[in-house]
Length: 329
Image (cartoon, rainbow, N blue to C red; front, side, top):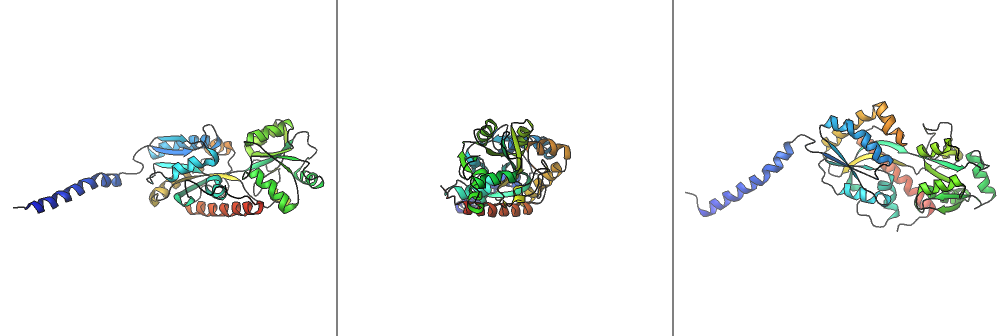
């Protein structure tokens, strides 16, 4: 006959087993076992359109619906925070970029996330910019623009999006490292700066290469160079800034990530699925290249290649910020 103590012990053990049953059942479920949420930025923007375009075939392949969760907010911080703190079961993924991984930690003394809280899955593409001048500018190429700025310091106005923006870093780098002085004119956003260049309010601006080239084709601005490390596949006739001695690369990019702790088998499953999508040329041309993203290395590569790329990107931004002297807020 069982004593009260024995019965109590048995009861505790049974309760523990009962509590484990749901966890064991979940562990045995094949991935994915429920809809996948992909957190990205503003609806209708290049990240959002790319994700929605890739998510259709990804949903079919995984056998689960995919929900796009748009998170707006300065410097992609709300997006990164939501992803970093999600449950690492593969049912919450996110887009990430140079802002979240490389620039924000240098610009902000306090962030609601750490870069170590992410699991790289796959790199998708780079988002380079183009240097534009007003259509009436006498500068017909990037060297002529640089020569004009050298001859008359601060006579040419350059639209930026404030401290830490790519344009601001280029302006300050040119001033400090090359002795080429443009007048820094900050705007609240890059579209405002582009509009100012189109009307002649400023002389120079930068903009994402896809939309920037479209405006150049309209005749309202002239494209002089790209900020890509090498010539862009979108504009092979335009030199990169590196060709004229501006050896600083601060472009953004898009890649897929999840929260840290994501099981290796899930990371590799997602990597394999995205590799198949990035090998689909018509799909890539429409939803990746169509948004201005260039599928340059390590696009479609391994998680380890993506992680190495991020470390290199972080080093490049750290060097740029150190040169221009921007201090974290």
